[in-house]
Amino acid sequence: MAGITVKAAYGSVVEDDGFLFIGFAEGEDEADAYVLFRQPAGGGPVWFEASDETFGAEDAIESVVAGPKGFEVTIRPDKRAAFGFAATVAVRVGPGCEDGPEAVAALKGMLGAVWRE
Image 1 (cartoon, one colour):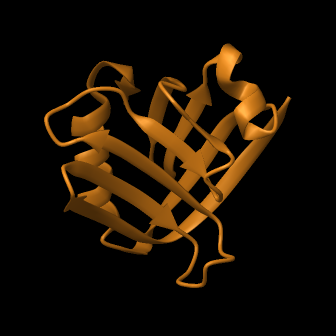
Image 2: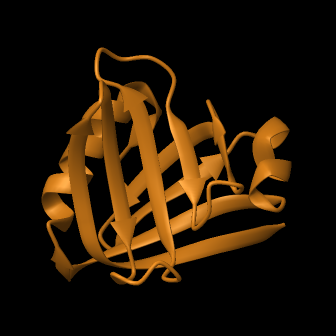
Image 3: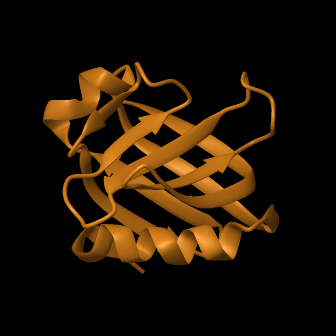
């Protein structure tokens, strides 16, 4: 089973058009790897994508485990085809990640019960 890793240089939390967007990106260029989480502002299913909207799905997150180097998203088995059959997506959020702590805190709030420390 394949895995994806994003070494985040930037984190972001944006509310726009009735949605909350939380993202982590390796850089500012469109070609840089990223992960994006999107949820209606009032709550509801979470859309998750990795580096391209074609590699994403709604309600795809089985669990998220946070650790000292970031967090790892486990994708539900029935949604892995949408991610090129990757089972996990690791997001490395180091001390140099701009707005990383704020984005991690917001993501923890968004994901609630699937977030584990």
